[in-house]
Length: 127
Image (tube, rainbow, N blue to C red; front, side):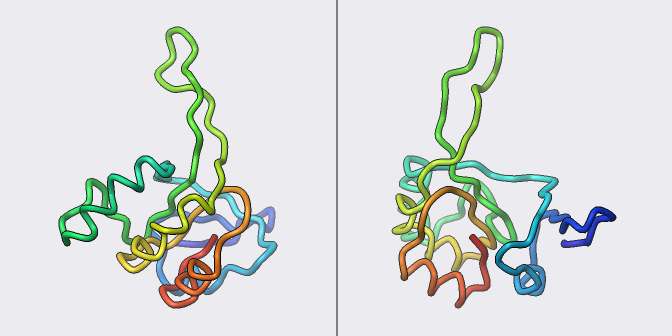
């Protein structure tokens, strides 16, 4: 769901619909609340065999957003360390299959390959 906040920022709460994604334009300022999944190439590599076998994924990706993050060690007494973006193009070989299953958004840094750009258009996703 997307609403326009009083400050002019688009407020995004997954799950997202096709219409939600189509309402976004390059350069929009957004504020995401709710569930945001994090994963990088190792996690994607575990999802692909499940997708290829037609098995259920451990998360329902329909309408969801995945933030490509790199891990950092947790400080003593903390559960997780700081989280920051990692290179999105490393997930390019996995992204079209996830978009086909209904994933609506990805976040990371850097460029996306043409195959991903085409899949984003075809399945109405956003990067």
